[in-house]
Image (cartoon, rainbow, N blue to C red; front, side, top):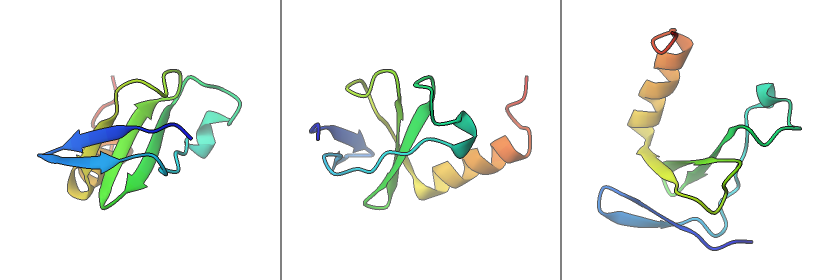
Length: 77
């Protein structure tokens, strides 16, 4: 498994054993998705096409606000 670190608000996260997952709505057969891992009370997000690339890290509150906004259509174009 690849070793990777993430950083958020002044602390580092070891993502070596992170269990990344994609939405079940992605069909599972595509690599054009974002992947999410729940690690040490934080939520890590990465591009499935570039798993060695940068990782965005969010607090639980930030993630919950994003998910609720998406459900409510806040980001619809």
